[in-house]
Length: 165
Image (cartoon, rainbow, N blue to C red):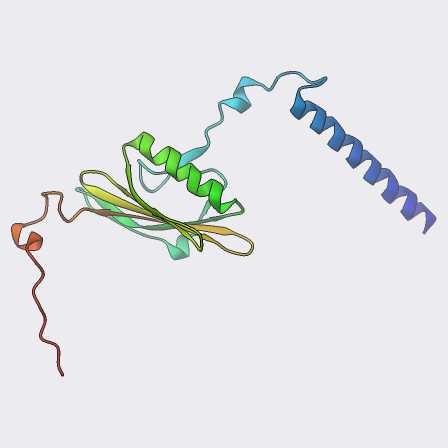
């Protein structure tokens, strides 16, 4: 029993010393500068949509995703999960999507964050849900109905339906 206690104490001491060493390195005391390779590491990757950057910490949830692709367009809903802060995730999309020519049209926040971005021919809705152990982001990309690529009859006012009474 005494050996287990001493072994545990030794391990905790080593971990504590390692923590102090890394804290000093983060402050720049007694440590070489960070390598340029780690500083140039991309923050995200383009996955299903070539103009929507996804943070590296997020993993695709294939069961909750659906993408439809034709030679003319790609549309769908892709869902990602990760252990990230929901506010940081919203800030990431708000900063990164405009770099790919998306324009933020509206944003709703608090219980969840919903951001609507647009391009001349498509819309992108980013829905961020802060769960207990994960943060979920749903990214929906769809062609715009008013982009000029739909037939004239599709752009007219919707017809009323006669519903049974």
